[in-house]
Amino acid sequence: MSFVVAWSNKIELVLRGKGLWKLVTGDEQEPVAGDESEIAKFAKRRDVAVTTILLSIEESCLSPVMNLRDPIEI
Image (cartoon, rainbow, N blue to C red; front, side, top):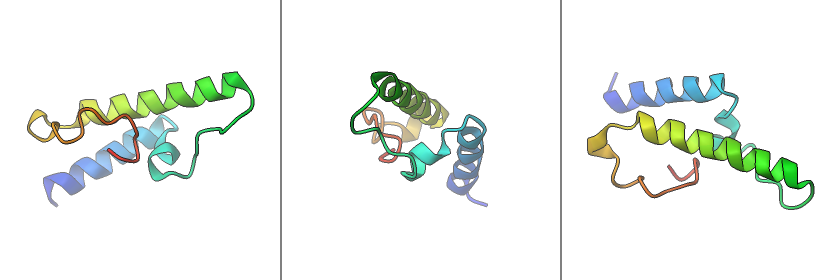
C-alpha cells in the first residue's frame, strides 16, 4: 500500500470519527441562509476539518494546499 493511500485511509477514519467526513465529500453543504447559529456551527466544523487535514500532511507535501480553506479542495 502506498503512502498516499495509507494517509488517505487514516485521515478518512479520523474525520469520520469527528463527524466531519461529509464536509470533505461534499455531502454536507454550507447553509445558504437562515439561522446564524447554524451557519456559525458549519463554519467551525469546516475549520476543524481543514485544520485536521492540514496538520496531518507531511511538511514536504504541504505547500500546494497550505493556503486552501475548503476541505473539499484540499
